[in-house]
Amino acid sequence: MSKKINLRPLGDRIIVEPLSERERGKETKSGIFIPETTEKERPEQGVVVAVGPGKMNDDGKLVPMSLKVGDKVLFTKYGPDEIKQDSKDYFILSESSVLAVIEG
Image (cartoon, rainbow, N blue to C red):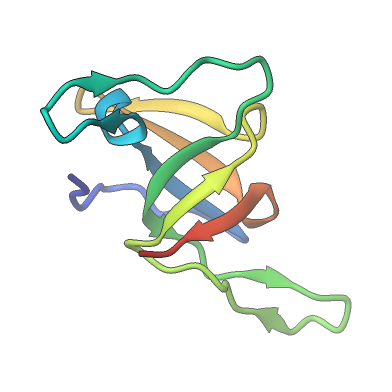
């Protein structure tokens, strides 16, 4: 799904490729696709495709990012900025807008 993009996020920002509706939904054993319900303040999910260097603390030292390319993340719905590159949608958001890393 994820591919290399020619954008480099600055500071503590990341670029996320949103999961498709099929990837967010569930499929029964018989192959029937059940889409995720749309709720008003539902967080979004995606895969990190680019990571900035980190954020400078008050002492002027770089605090490195805890996220890495390939992490599947859950983030606030209204936190990211949407961009389009090569007819594909991406989100740019701060590391603080990420609620969790989805493991497994």
